[in-house]
Length: 483
Image 1 (tube, rainbow, N blue to C red):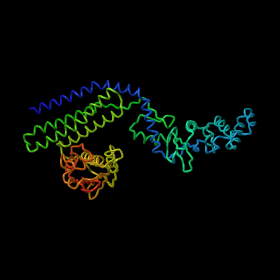
Image 2: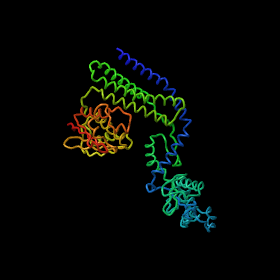
Image 3: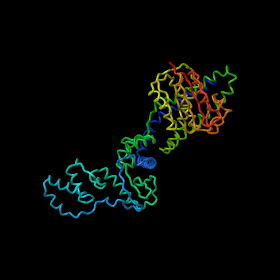
Image 4: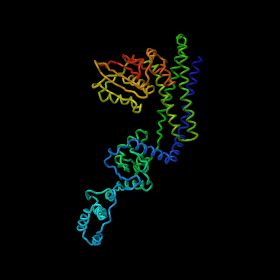
């Protein structure tokens, strides 16, 4: 009876927590938006600095055919002395220009184009472009190109702003650095000042940067080295209904599982000590992220937006959610298979979706060239747990798939210290943790591999550690490709 009362109290407490979140939600939205508007300039400056650092680390000049480059010596003097046109001696020719017909004006200007490197040619380029914006020029110098292309003019202006602000380039090395533009020195000490095309940066490098930064509502400004936010910018995407539903469902299922367990205590006398130990560990695991959520929420409410607090809050929430999912799987009653036939491309997409959460820390090698028939739900949980362990204990992992004699084979290997021979026979037991796992990551209940073993059994498959006692633990899963 006392157990039932405790369960009811837990559920009532959960309802009160969700209700309090609902009351605070509208106020928090308003406060977040107000703070975002106040801090937008700071956010833009931070993203701009990150974008410039990203260019320094990843940019390769040969990848951009439209890069604008000016070369200088270590003292900031132009290496190409002919960058600016030389003074012409034929100024008298221009006095009669305005009296000529438009046809003769064009002929006159075209004749001046033959005077390479002169002010006469530069002036002719400028006037021809004003007369005919579609005129096809040939062999224009970089300076002359600035007269007919506004984007090139802006890029060259950035370079000369750099030269104006900096005259000593003695510390520039043969790798990219950034000040106002990208800079790099060759083996002879000549320094190249470069501005890539806005088109290349936007379509290629900036897309990769936004993906890595996980920010979609930013774009490049006219200066390709600066960032601006899109209209209506809001980095917070509220979906309170879904989040509260999942959280509430997780709590209800957790407490239901605990309640059912307590009701079975009388008939499971031999399991009491084991289950009590489990509950003690469970409380510790749940208390840590809940405490983090509470403290970080209070700090956010008190001090406003802070990236570190938000990151810590999301990390605690994800840890709690993942833990609840594992607990629910332990107590799932329905053991029947739910098979789905996947084509080659669908199966590859299925694998890609599983590893997407690990941020390029998993390499997939898929040798399967035929359709497969699998229990997508169970297999996803099995592979996810194996890969999560590979990342947790070995930093990186690989996933290899094969199909032979109608048997699907999955191999997951990490780059860690491996599993000791004495532990290898117990790692699939519930709540057991290998010595190497405890040394690498003290937190954990030791239920991940027991869930894997349970689900593999439900799929009528087999799983084993292929290299006990050796580095780079290798787990192999074999299931029948059901017809």
